[in-house]
Image 1 (cartoon, rainbow, N blue to C red):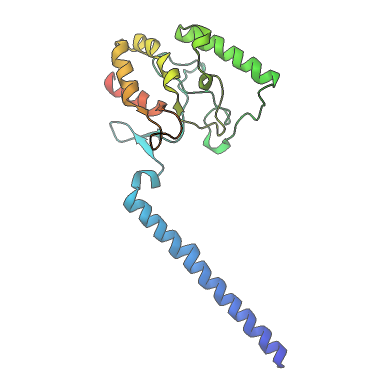
Image 2: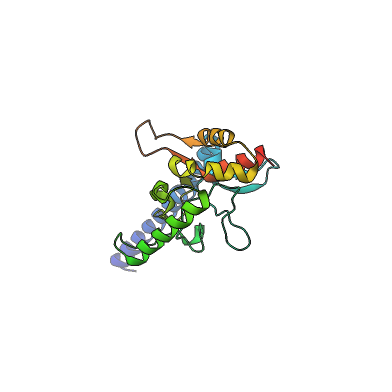
Length: 204
């Protein structure tokens, strides 16, 4: 075996050992470390921010929206409705996406006008009171939040359908409204899944 062959063999062996070491450190040890830290410090977030009902059953994730429709696909009057979703058939976590339609796209404009008319009638408000987030999907199609303005136009309808007072429903909305991050980033939002769960627990 000549010197060149021995040198090549040593180089290959060094590369193999480096690869094995890197895999063990970065692919195994680091992953286990971060998983352990997550489970210790932020267990809820590390496990998917799952939302459970009073019986402990998983009903969803606070990070992913849901649709509240009847068997015919019509919105349920007794639930707060989320914003539109372009992810699959709606809030499909395996098909996260927006519509990719520009603001001057005629199909988007027609869809917005149709939604505005439907939501105004469904909630018993003038069309000019329907906020923008009620008419357009988020970039991911999975946004679980709506604006306080969108929640506000739904209060009377939800209260009537559940036999509750509008004041009681509005109080629940306020309790499930999250303010700006760090006091100045973003806008206040309402988590629809958690709000509807609170409604179900209040008025079984």
